[in-house]
Structure formats: structure tokens, C-alpha cells
Image: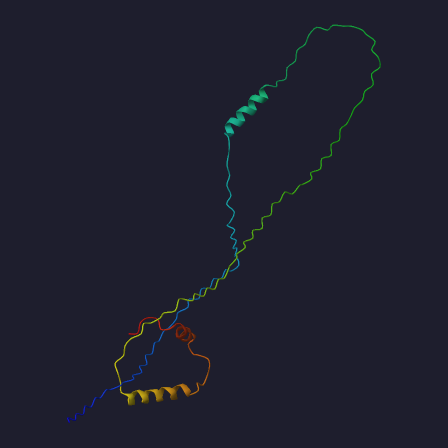
Length: 184
């Protein structure tokens, strides 16, 4: 009878790895404000301009030529006598009295410009597709180390948080979507 005894020892490691990922989301905020239209009026000093159209010497010559057309002349002919009895003449004098009144008609054009500015605010929220990281193989750890880590993790999860509000809402959105890329 041959007795043999063989001891086989196998190490079982349950390793828990915690990897913190920090991510900051930047949200641009665009604002546009259109102020009321401002009108500034500037009135410059009056600039007087005088234009002389035509030649004054030419005007004098033309007036002199018109005056020369009318000259006092007298022509005396022989007296021719005839006699006739004419009917009675009634004279009528019509005196026209023209009373002119000037009625001013005001033609005024009023232009009142109005500018309507319409701003359409758009708030866009883009929800990107979640990032899924592939599973990785970790090196083995001892059962004792793994148990100690599991106990610490359970104690940390059972500790109540002081406030439900997160100081960084972007971190909550990131946590819901997963880390931004493969673990480094």
C-alpha cells in the first residue's frame, strides 16, 4: 500500500476597485438684449447760399429794347368833315372790384418710423447617447482583503448624506449617463 498525500492550495482574490471620475459640464448661456431705438437730432447752423441765374447786363439790354418799341408819335392828316345825327348813347361803366383772399392749404407729411424687434429665445437641451465602458479583467486578491473592502463599502453606503442637493448638478447628470470615456 502506497500512501500519498497531495496538498493543493489555491488563492482566491476578490478585488474591488473604486475609480473616481470627475466631469465638469459647461453650459453656454446666450443672452441678447435689444434696446429701444434712439434718435439723436443735430441741426447745423444755417448756411446761406445765393445764386445769380442769368446775366444782369443782358436783362438791362432787353428792358431797354422793350422800352424803345413804344415811342410817342403824332401823325396829323387833313380834316375831313361829315355830319350825321347819331342815336343817343348811353354810357355804362362797369367797375370790377376784385377782392382776393389767400387761403393757405397746409400740405404736411408726417413720417413716424417704428422699428419692431422680435427676439425668439430658444433653450436647447441635448441629451447625448450614454457611454458604455467595456468590462475589464482585474488581478486576483485574497478573500480576506476582499471581505475587508466589502465591509468598508457597505459602511460607506449606509452613512446618511447631510443634504439631497448636489453641489454640482452636472456631476449628477454625468453619473446618470456614465463616465465620459474609457477608464484611464
